Length: 221
Image 1: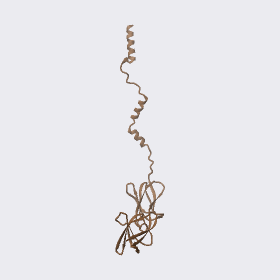
Image 2 (image 1 turned 90 degrees about the horizontal axis):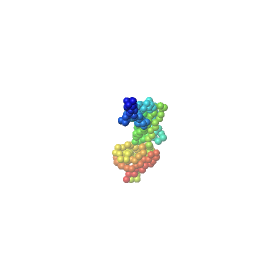
Image 3 (image 1 turned 180 degrees about the vertical axis):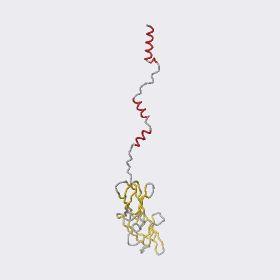
Image 4 (image 1 turned 90 degrees about the vertical axis):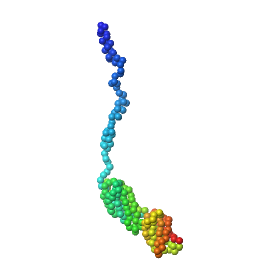
């Protein structure tokens, strides 16, 4: 009987852990499981989500007509379409239609006829050309219409030759005759150099206003 009691006590101690170290199989809390799941998500999983996103950017050719205007009048101009890499994708004349790959472009227009604008300027427009329906890009030049009244010590000069320089510049941008007709030129501030009978005169601070038609006195003392 005493032997049976000792065996029963030994079994009871084993079942209760015998007062030793706690079991290593303790259950995890819910929050701990979430943290472990988050940590096991690697970069591959994130990259996979990004790769699943469809590429919806349009691609393909686009047809574009480029026009150039001085004021409200369409004019002749040389045209270049320059892509984002700086390469000329197409070139020709204003009014032409070009076919180029869709994308970002610089549309460069240059007036080459001094009868259109005396200083034969170049201007640029930025344009995103999206593949699809044909479109038109308009490039507009600012303009002042000017008539120069040249006088030397109060006496009017007849048809003198006038070189025009942008203010601060040392290269003439236009050479005109001071007649009774207005001429078109890019607005801005100018210096005039007048030549008459072999004599040169210089007048600074001439202001040509955008959109205006002006009579500009050029008085030489």
